[in-house]
Length: 261
Image (cartoon, rainbow, N blue to C red; front, side):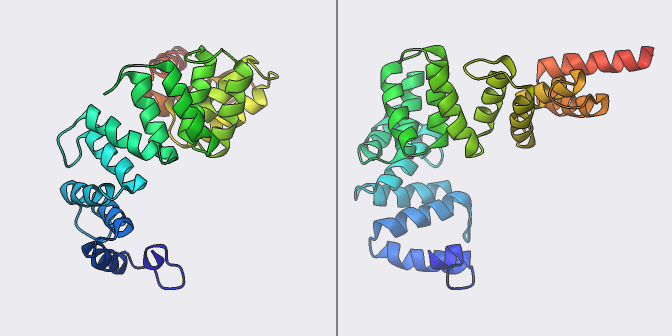
């Protein structure tokens, strides 16, 4: 791990892999999991989903939560193994029971969507809540959506705002966008075009098409920012290229207006 992170020694992924391999061969679960991750990402070794699955399986059999979660994700996505929602749920459940936030979030998504398990908004909320309390941004965002829609929990714009704010502060683009919408509309928070623009800007910089569109609209109308047709067109173009229908429509309107003018 010191070689992988360059802590106290020159960073070397190849040397990290060599050492993980030695420890994994002796049955050390943490090394098996970390080496599996290296194979999954192709970090310091030729990428191989199948080898990642083999190593995660060894570590998961020893009860290592991170390996159970990683293996569950492989089954979830059919990476290196035949896709199986049921096996993904089984593995996420084992890891979630050990308090692993990422597993709690992933399992929450399964319950939310009824994927590999009977759909349950209440169970999704319970699991998102556990993961969100540990600071998992994805869980904070999804739990915020549950509060907005009153799914599995009593509807509360204020609680949604609180959760979006926590996730947005960690750089979660969708949370930044949704929080921006709340500020733009004054929903659950004091209305502020300027704060909406700030949040849209953060999300748009990460490639969020909806944020790019909304930010373009702000520049188009001069809401919370100095009016700029050029910046509006730039942002509409970015969002339109990702298939955002509203941005495509606005861009067409701008182009027609420009040609007729």
